[in-house]
Length: 117
Image (cartoon, rainbow, N blue to C red; front, side, top):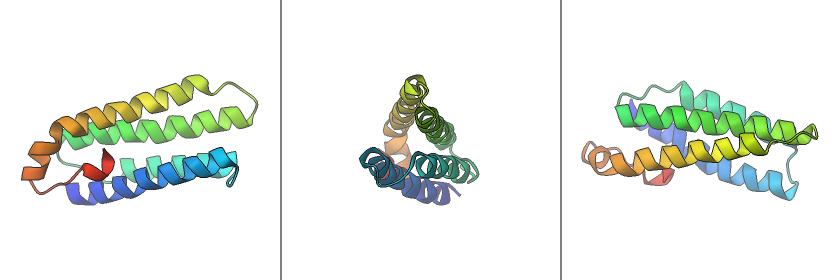
C-alpha cells in the first residue's frame, strides 16, 4: 500500500518539476500546467497510504499540486496568484519536513522516500 503511494507520489513530484519548468519557459500553456497539477493532486490523494507520516505528506502534496494549479490559472487570467503560489510552496515544505523526519523509520519498513525529498 505505502509503496504504491510512494511510487505514485515520486512520479508526480518529479513530473511537477519538469512541467513547472516547461510552464516557466513557455513550452506549455497555463491551462496545461494547471491541468497537470490538478491531475497530480487527484492521483496522489487517491492512492491509499497507511503510515501516518505518509498520510500527512499525502495531504501536503495534494495541497501543493492543487494550489499551484490555482495560482497558475489566476496568473493566466491576469490576477494575482502570488498568495496561492506561496501556499503551494509552503505545502511542499511541509511534505518535505514530515518525510525527512519519518525517513529513518520508513526505511526500516522498506519504504524509501528519498525521491520525494
